[in-house]
Amino acid sequence: MDRFSEQLMERASDKKGMFLKGLVVAGLILVLVLLGYLMVLFQYSITLFCLVAGAGAIWLAVYIMQGLNTEYEYIVTNDDLDIDKISGKRKRKRLISVDLKSVDDFGPYLNETELNPDVTVLAEDGTGIDLWYVFIETESTGKVAIIFNPDERTRKNIIGGLEPVLRAKLSAKYLSGAEETEE
Image 1: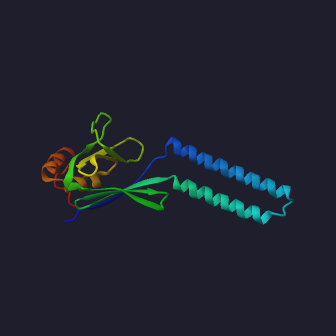
Image 2 (image 1 turned 180 degrees about the vertical axis):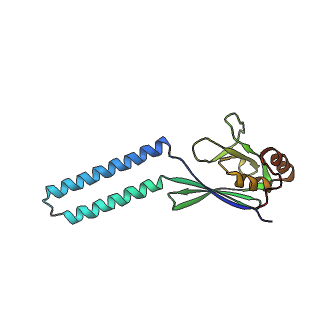
Image 3 (image 1 turned 90 degrees about the horizontal axis):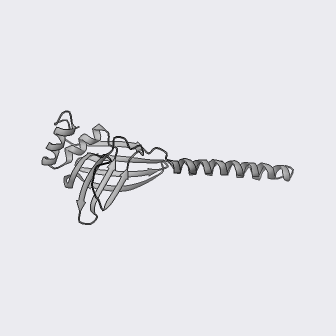
C-alpha cells in the first residue's frame, strides 16, 4: 500500500518581514501623496497619468507584499520526502529531496538537541513550536539536518518509510498505533 501525504505550512511573519511590509505601505502612501500633489500643481491636466501611476503603485505594493509571504510544502511519497519553498504563492523551489531509507535519525527537535550538521535546512513555521528534525548523512553534502513542522499524518508516513530497525524504534516511541503508518 502506498504512503502519501502533503502538508502546507505557512511561515509566520517575523520582525524583518513586518518592517518590510511597513516600508512598502509607507512608500505607497508617499507615492500617492506625491501624485496627488502633482495633480493639484498642474491643475488636473495630468489626471489620467496620475491615476494610472497610482494604480500601478498600488499593484506593485500588493505584488511585493505577497512576495514576502513564505510557505513550505512537505510531500511524502512512499519512501521519499520532498520539501518545497513557495514564495508569494507564485514561485516554488525544491529545497531538498530525501530518500527516507537513508535517514539516520528522526525525532522532536528541542533547543538542547545536538545534531552538529554541515548543512541545516530550515523549513519551519517560525514559531519554534512542535519542531521535528530529520538527520541524514550523504557523501555529496555531508551531515544534513532538516528542521520542520510535520503534522501527525506526515510524521506517520515518514516513519513508515524509514529502515525497519529505525521504524520499529520510532513507532514505539512516537506513534500511538505502530502499524498505522500505511494510509
